[in-house]
Amino acid sequence: MRKMMISTALATSLIASVASAETKVSAYIETTLGSGETPATSGNTPVNQGTTIGYEHGVTFSGSKELDNGMTLGTTFGIEDGDAAAAKGITFGIGNTSIIVGNDLNTIDDKQSVPVIANAIEDGNKGLGVTYNNNKLTIHETNSIGFRTKTDYGTFGVNYAPKVGSTGFNDSNPGHADNGKTGSGLAYGFQGSLGIEGLGVNVAKTVRDTDSLDSKERTQLVTGISYNFGNITVGAQNTNYDNVSGTSLDYSATGNADARSFGATAAINDQFSVGIQYAEYDGAGVGTANEEITSITAGYNLGGATITVQYHDAENVDGTASNNGEAIELRLKQSF
Image (cartoon, rainbow, N blue to C red; front, side, top):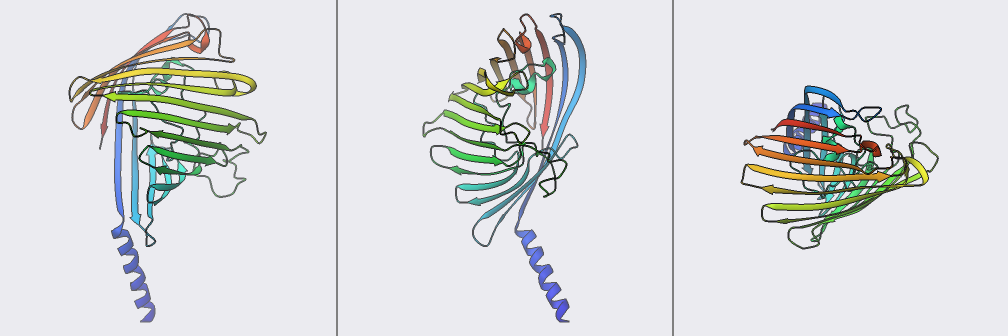
């Protein structure tokens, strides 16, 4: 009887704990119809890639619970395109400060100051094979630990990845085959308005070792600013890469590169918006000409779903003069 009473009390306690926690499920699906003429792998003659239909989808489970010591415990687990590659981890909240252990949760070095309606340039031009990327060395998608604290002026954050090559559900053995011998990474930054309505400031620095234990450090310094006035938002951002070379930003003791972007969006009414982005990239081991990309987007809110049309024009891809391409995408996204 005593064992039964203990078991009953324990079960009641567990049920009460679950009942007092808040759990949410969110999901999305994107359907894209794309057509493009992309740069050739050799020479400057574009290749017509035809028209394709593609999908992206994801689901996220999140929960939160007030602990007895006054802290808030948050949990997140996501699945994207059938793979457990989305955000995951736990967060401990203490007032305005959060301690974060996870993957793709502490995004202090992955913010975009340039406003967009659909995809940012680094995400929407994969078919064109452009080199430009405003956060190539970010560690937000690695298994990491850090904190964020909010103030009236903005959010400060720090993120540390013991092994920048560790991104999945590896076990706790440091020598696990999936972890590999990888270096560490440290990111810290600030995003906020500085107390000025409509202003957005974005400053972040990442110091990241190469994916080995050779202590070869590469750095990424992001500086950006945006401003919203009425139905118009404008923004600019520059990312400086140091100790890098080539399109994959391999280690080089003397190389550096710059990724610059500018953009604006305007809400014509509550449903219809338009936007433009321009970006350029140049750096060591990339080529002799500046890569330049222009993206023009129109979006319409259907209420529960959005439809966008995005046109991309790329010139001097990978720094090769006259290596040009263009693409257009029609995208329908539904979130629920």
